[in-house]
Image (cartoon, rainbow, N blue to C red; front, top):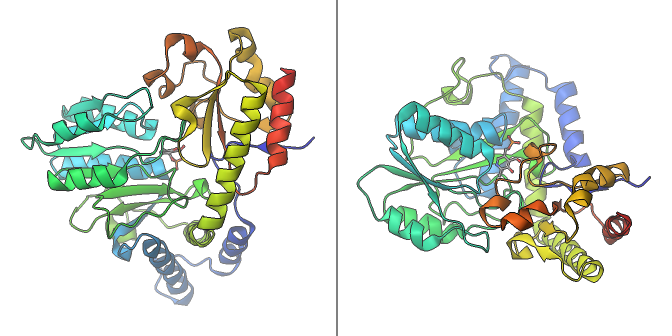
Length: 375
Ligand code: PLP
């Protein structure tokens, strides 16, 4: 049975070149980067080189890149330290955020009594920019805006330039969860005044268990994990050298191949939209279907009974797609993202998130359509 993987927003396969680099490090460069003898120093050099490679992709300084275990950790660290150490008293965010941000902010509200404002979501699945503009004008309270760049469920893209400039103009900190966009679009941090971004290697064909935070120099965060002096004491714990090297290789390749792969993946998404519309003339694309080029969230015009079994049946036929975000799969609750802008009635219908990579082909889409037609 042909396996069709259409869940690249959940995670991606690791590029063979990345695996090769990682295996080489595991075999040959096993020294502890904190050790002072040669193999330790060599491991340390590999980490610093990876940091340089990563920083270069964003026109950032190497010292602004701090390695973490994943995107969730990076988000937790930034938000917590912003409240605890930078005096943030008010967070403006949205209910479209990933749980790594939503639940962290909720926890911080409970612990520190900060004010949290959730922006209204328009039917197009976008935030209300005008509301944000009005809110940031109030400069009374130290404020942080936390908004994701690309939504992981519908692919809605934030106007980064608009939000970053607005925050800068009003002296507001801006944290952007860029887990879904790093490696998939260019982010020039020398031009965009964003204070914090985060990334996770497994979203751009790198290994799981490694990510990073970009912390602009002027913002001095303090650690949430204490121990040794790794990452200048900001994130203790012996570094996974192979993970760091793998992440840098994956990111470098993602940006080298960006234009070609972007065009190819956008073509696959267009083909998918076209084929779906042929089969279901009244299909609806959530968020207008015009979100980021690798994500397509579809609302299928089928009954509730059919909907309940759909993911299971697709799985039985070797097709991996997601209902909402990966972290929720298996749960019967409606997606916290879709419930922000879909009607009660539409929420009962099955919504599927399809997310593509350079490895997908039109044939994969044909297999999906063929199976959908039998359900
Ligand atoms: N933020 C977004 C937008 C995501 O899509 C994800 C993962 O799905 C995360 C954060 C969490 O990243 P990680 O899996 O590295 O913890």
